[in-house]
Length: 442
Image (cartoon, rainbow, N blue to C red; front, side, top):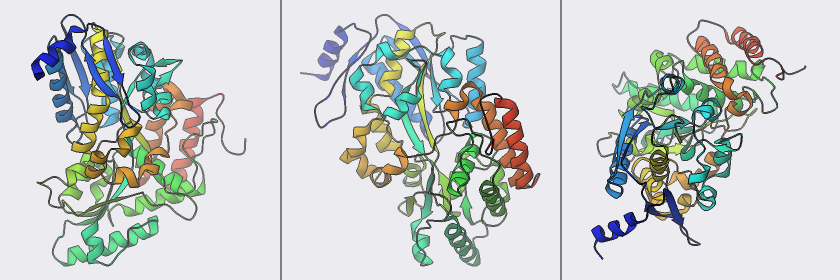
């Protein structure tokens, strides 16, 4: 049977949505049932790394199967905070211009009122193939407001060739990281690379800094921002010590400009061969090993460091696909979203760009593990990552995060000392969150 004939047979089925089949050893396999009628679906997608390119390629695959649907991909800002601001402009205006939104793992509570319930479009079997915790995260008041697309957790990247060159082990504590970063930085600069730095990370005042700082806080035994029980846990000596440590990196093992870095800024320095260590998300692995990368083949990945007071901590990240309540073609939009988040598409993204699947069986897929070996070795990191307090603070989470990363940034830039910053932050969070939230000792 020709591919063309097979496609025609599949398109005969006029049921909206997707039908999945699964055997005992494979992830759900997709049979496409295209929406009836013609429609244009606009997807607001990320553009970090090769995200935009991957989304455009997936859109093309969808249109080849469903030529009656046109899929357009809209580029959005790299910084999550900027992206949320753009989304809110569309949604609060009830604009039909965007049908599908790529939303952060922390946004379901903020954006739920603007999104349709995807439950009628997804089979129980398909939903059960995703990490249950992410499905639960995306369910607000009993409605599935986002289908999981990819998950994330913060990781430590290192130059394996430089660790070998300087006879150093992969650091497991922040003290070890600082010592190794300084040693390699000194050595590389002595050999003539004055642009070399020991450690790069995300220090700009945006959501990425909340992720980095939460990892510092937890790994130093400083609790979390707001506990699931509503206790505000920012004013403690451990978090003060963590912030003082991070501020000490600026201008020593990290460039002064790191306080303006996002993910791509850090990756640019690391991938150019000008840093020994980097904190970033899994997507940076495939890009760093691309043919045009000067450090291809010399990249190692490990859990982020811890301390004697706290464990290794990785902030939970990840993105979902949601359908706007204001879409003029909700059935077509849901069809596109579920296709993009399907097992075959997640597998392509994992192999080509090291995006972590949300479908559990893909972590045992030989082709995925060959392309991204640490998906297997660091599986526990991804399944035990530290969540930001988006559930307990709900629609106020964005304001919580802004207060948090602004306070952290003020310490990194020397505008405030760490003790004053956390004391002020505690007061600001209490004022914002109000009744039902406490501080230790109350």
